[in-house]
Each structure stands twice: as C-alpha cells, then as structure tokens.
Length: 255
Image 1 (cartoon, rainbow, N blue to C red):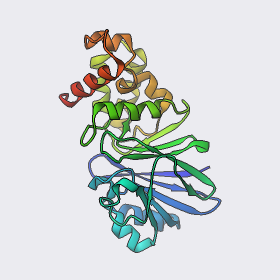
Image 2: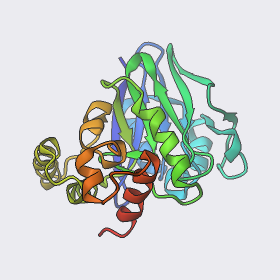
Image 3: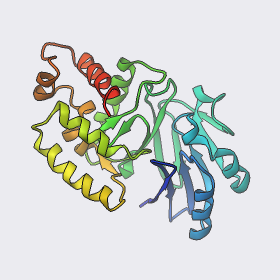
C-alpha cells in the first residue's frame, strides 16, 4: 500500500507526499512550499522521484523549482499548462497514465476551477488527488472555466467507486459544511458529519481524506438531484446543471 503524509502549510493548504515502500519511489503533490517537503523527505529518508501538479496556481506550484533543484525530481503536470507550471518536464492529458513504482494513476481532465486542471486517480489503490476541483463538501471556484465545465468535471468524479479516498488541497470544510446546511438543512447525514468535522477542527485535525461515498451523501455540489436542495433554492423544474450553477453562485456569496 502507498504511504501518504499530509503536510498542512500556509493558511489552509495541504501538500501530499506519497511513498511506495516496495520501489522506494516518492511523489509530492501540489507543493505550495519547498521546505516542509524537503524536511519531511530528510526525516523519512525518502528520495523524491516525482512532483505532480494539478494546476498552475501559486499555492500549488510555489515549491516546484526549489524542490526540483534539490532533489532532481521529474515534474509532471497538464500539457495545456506547460507555459504556466514552473519546471515542468512532462505534460499529460486525460487518459494518460503516470506511475509511482507499480502503482498507476490515471489522468482525468477536470476544467472549471482553471482551464487546464487535472486530477490523479490511483484506481487500484482507490485514491484520488483532486487539487481544487473537489473539496470536502465543496468544489473549486470558477476562475477560468464555466459552471457547465465544472459540472461535467464533477460528474466524472461522482462516477468513481464510492470507496475512493479523496485528497483535496485545502481545509475549507467547516465553511463548506455551514453552506451545505443552508441548502439542505434536513440532511441528517450532513448534520451528523458537521458534528464530527467541528470536533476534528477544534483539535486542529485535518478533515481529509474524505470519500466519494461521503461526498455523495453530503456535498451540495454532488447533490443537484436532491429534491430538498432543489426546493430550498426554488429550482425544482430546472436542469441539473442549472441547479449546480445556482448552488455555485450562492456559495460564492456565502461567508
């Protein structure tokens, strides 16, 4: 099994180190900063082989150059982001596969948050590293794409096996959950989940990973077909994509 270390950095970012104990290969995913990664590699005695980026935002690529200079790792990111990813060595597209030892990650294109966002799905390991496309009870803002693009992207993730563990790159969960309760206040799974979330955060514990199953039950951006949600936002006769777009609009104004 892959070993995963979660590194909290900045205000609410997570960096992930993923290690294969058989091949001894290690990858880092979306390093906002270099030093926490380098310190952990030294502490664990791991050699970094790869750096995987999901998109070009600075809080996901800020550590790229220093990490590459000090480890010699290979940087992999979306081909369409070649000009925006520092130090990129290999561009990938949807349907491509990257390897970490014998473990293989499928590349899934998920435009919406940015135009070239990708995610890494280790199908046999039931792991998804999704950057800013999907959050615990939330999804990314529309910086470069449209609501329709992001909706189609999320449909791909909704279709993954329910047991898939989801590693997103921000700790937005409490705010996301509070918003979710405004559009689906009678969702008992959501109510119960928020009790657990608040307990974790009161102890400064991360709320990741989540699972596809948990998101299907509690994430309003996965629940555009919920009758309660549709009634709450007065969109019972609307197309599902339009419901999603309205939920995204409402979330943009929520604080």
